[in-house]
Length: 268
Image 1 (spheres, rainbow, N blue to C red):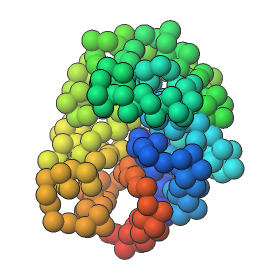
Image 2: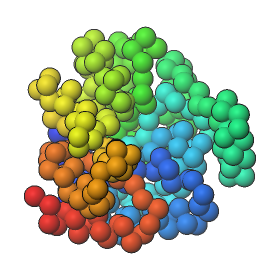
Image 3: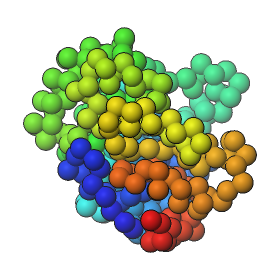
């Protein structure tokens, strides 16, 4: 698979990043791990996760894959946490998610941007991932009024000096970006944000003279808006739109993985 260096960083990774946000839905652990292994076999070198994904299961699923493939790199996040914590057994997670369909508060995430919680969260993520370092550490959909920006910047820079994290930044919808871009640019060294082919939401970065670093959402946006395009057509256009950075994709179908790799061989 084609590789790129994420603009503004030294992180070189596959053009397509494998996203794990929906990995836990309806699949047994052996199926999830087999899918992650297949992604690595097909050239994905970077994986995107968070403590909230699968209520901690996503990070734990990745640990064995990362151990077997030490060259892989990973993003995880901080600030959004799982109700009931990230150490629940799989059965408890399934029950909580199912009950949340009827009573949303049961599966509603906890949002906490206090640095004390963040310090613990980083150590917990490193333990679940089985790594001493996170290559890319992102504030997860932060709100400017909940973040002590100077203190966060000092802490993240200290973590980078200590070797616990590599690059850092913000993973957010574009609507949440302007306050950080204007008031706390130091926290926006890397921006991961939603984008679509017709909405072009990530142009908020280009208007400020910034490249698209990591984007996601192209396929789901196209399908939700009834665009008559195949997945391949959508992603081929997405690669043209975000020509410099990386694009997060996800699938539960192993046959899709080879298609993604082949698509990049023919994309401009």
